[in-house]
Length: 317
Image (cartoon, rainbow, N blue to C red; front, top):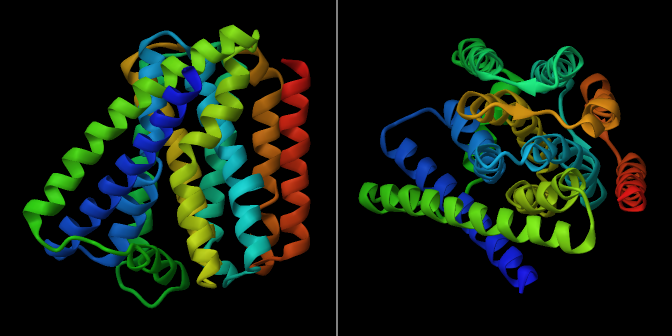
């Protein structure tokens, strides 16, 4: 029965994120917000709302393995699984200058998490304040640099917003989708956490492993759907932009909110090994940042690396 509740939770998370993003984009367009700002905030952050809801709820319940594991695992899955799959479907080609800044932000966020984990075994409110302040700074820097238009990175962020389809133009409907999406996210997150904890206990698997794998991939489904659709449309560069934005938000936004709401333990397994895997996965973005390309060969290698990573976790469970 727990598998049924888990699947139901995942479904509600995906539907909730879709409603929130489409409704948010609809309201933003109605208010005349620029596609650039919509891409930087609503789209990039909205697709990460499942991770936000699950990690916050887990932190409030004292489930640090799920709260932190979900963040680290999602960043790993975003690159080694979702971005790799998009590259295999349609090789990614983008102007390097379009992603260098956001790539640097992703690397900086990963290094920040490592610095925190090396200095303490518990996230507290001031870590949350620091992360959220840095998230706001990245958004402001991006907008100020791109608001004049005509740059490669600005065009990429605007294209992310334009990629969102079936957007409601009626403000009442858009607002209802936002509110309904939030409700579905909260309900789905609660169902998913409860089912995941029961499954972990039944099979003798640690909450950290569940957070790094099952929860992380499940909450990343909106990014997966968005990236695969973009790749099928031969817009894999948009998939790359979406993944970069999501990975920045996962650490600076989700970790920030979770830490601010409830002190959260950083599991020893993550501080010892998994955060370095996240850093290694982030380093694989270097080819795109330097040459603007991630081909099918690298995509397949990344998928193989992710399969080996999951196999290692399962073997250790």
